[in-house]
Amino acid sequence: MPLFIGLMSGTSLDGIDAALVEIPVPTEKDTRCHPRLLAHHAEPMPEPLRGQLWSLCHADHASFAALATAEEVFCRLQAQAVESLLIESGTANSAITAIGSHGQTIEHAPLGHRGGPAYTLQLDNPSRLAELTGCQVVADFRRRDLAAGGQAAPLAPAFHETIFRTEDEWRLVLNLGGFANLTLLPPRQDERNPLGFDTGPANALLDAWHARHRGERFDADGRWAASGRVDEALLERLLAEPFFYLPPPRSTGRELFHLDWLQGHLRGGEAPQDVQASLAELTATSVALGVAMARERLDAPPATALVPCGGGTHNPDLLDRLARHLPETPLMSSEDWGWPADWLEAGAFAWLASRRLSGLPGNLPAVTGASGARVLGGIYAP
Image (tube, rainbow, N blue to C red; front, side):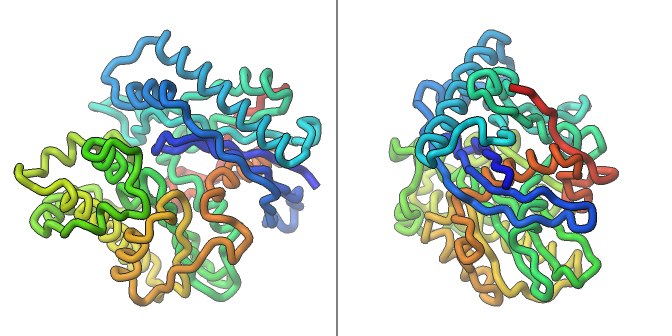
């Protein structure tokens, strides 16, 4: 059975997730496959590299030397993640069919910037990664969808369909990374396509505000947010952001939602913990708005389950808020389907690599807005 490694570093900049996945070769008659997670490894992001990447993500101008330096360090960290995963799982690099590398998003502008062309920039060097690991690498997954008129995001809904879609149930999958994206899956017996889009910020603003006031990367278990009180007037101002009401396809990132955006909505004198509580409520409320929009668009009944994944699943306060906003839909663990919540995104890029080598599309045009299904990614020989 072919083995693939998926590498993912998200907008939280906390590390590189590496997943070892067994993926059957799809046949012409049935392109559905059933990936199986065999092993995983989390490679922490060193603080100097995190600082470099953070600066690049927020830079109006960046030098080629700064980009090249960060890329080299990042690529070596990817190679370390692969090596650790192979050692821990007792797997030889020769057994790996390919590595699917997402890279590190620096900027994502699917609608362009100030009238310019659409673009998305992931810091990555697949040629170097192939050299360092001795493995074939598939990378640059987003720009083919962008070239076809899509938003190049989110890409995970196609993988969500493979893992979670059933014959007779409506299901929701919610990725809570730096930003939140939602997938609504109709039953397979239904002719309608899955729908997916970004709902807004998840951990990005929560982490940034917490780091500014508490000096730590994230609010463990959401305890600080839980200690605050939602500032309803602030929440109303935040929810006035037009993005929350745009129809899909839509995607977002730090280009819109950042601390300066938040600061522009503060009036001064707010207690920091109340702002944190309001940001957690913003995430839950914007997800609920997204669920309502998705259901209306597909004329769908309440889903039988909402499956949260990503780092936000470790935040009980955030999950409690989501449950209050979505009382008709029970939250269920992704582990019930064999996929721990932390490893779905890395698994998705292993799966996308397998699709590329099989010459099969990796995007969902109904999600990204592309003009059609496209084979995603470039292949880099070892």
